[in-house]
Each structure stands twice: as C-alpha cells, then as structure tokens.
Image 1 (tube, rainbow, N blue to C red):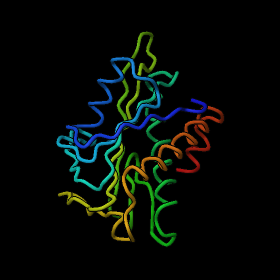
Image 2: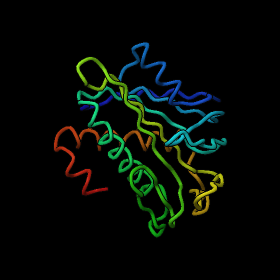
Image 3: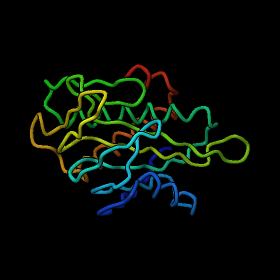
Image 4: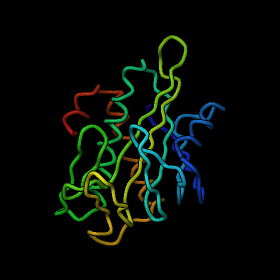
Length: 192
C-alpha cells in the first residue's frame, strides 16, 4: 500500500464507475486506478439501492489490491470513510457539522451527503483479488431520498470541482491506507 501511484481517469458518462473499474480490474489494471464519471446513468449504493448521479457531484471508484483475507475487506471501506471525512473537512467551512454514520455514510448537519460502497472479489486461497471502493458525494446538489434528508457541499459555500475534490480525496485515502498498513486498524477506528 505504501506510496500508491494514483491514476485518475475521467469520463463524461458511465453507467457505473464501480462496474467499469471492476471490468478494468479483471483485465489486470493496477492498484491505484481510479475512475471518475461526470455523470452516472446506473449508479448504485448498498443493498442494490440506486444512487442518483447528476453532473457536479462526485462519482468515483478506486481499485485496491490489498494483501488481506476477504473478511478484512470492510476495514478498507471504513478507512475510506475516514479519508472522505478528512477530505470533506479540509474543503468545507470549519463550522459545518460533519460526521460519519456507520458504516458508510457522510452526514452534513445530520443529512446524507455521501456514501461508500466497498466490493471485494475473492482470489485463490481466500485472499482479496481486488477491491473496488465506489464513492459518491453530493457536491453541487442533493438528490432526494425517500427515507432520509440529504445535503450537499453547495449549501455551505461554493462546491469544489469533482476532479479537484477527487485529487484531495485520493491523497487522504493514500494516507489512511498507509496508516492501516503500518499501524493496524486502531488509529482508523479512533479517527472514525
């Protein structure tokens, strides 16, 4: 994990950045490959829920190839959540109430502003062959959800450009993954 070389690919539109990245992973794409779509037409969240993906919001998937058993896959999703909170905190005004909701949501003023979908593929011997982190963040607008309030960064000031925010997020994710590799899960749990 040390010194991940991020390779960010930006596309105008994709059905799902996670599906696109899973196909690239199957073709041998290296760890650190990331795909950002300006728009998704079939984005998804946990439990098969749809994820609305309008232009201006972040639709990013990141490929990891950790040397870890499949049952440890959720640890990478939690590290990504902390990295997302790190990136959001460095972007938003300091008075904005930001918190994480177990296991994968980022909340602004108690309303959902982002989420992470962690999907691992098993390799031979029970290890992770590859792991795709799908990350969606409401930067410019907050699509309505039937079961909870939503929020976006734009409600608190000018929203960041998705590519610029992705760069900040990848830097934070690299830091948290290095921390996980070097120190174990305890510091990530404490930050969470």
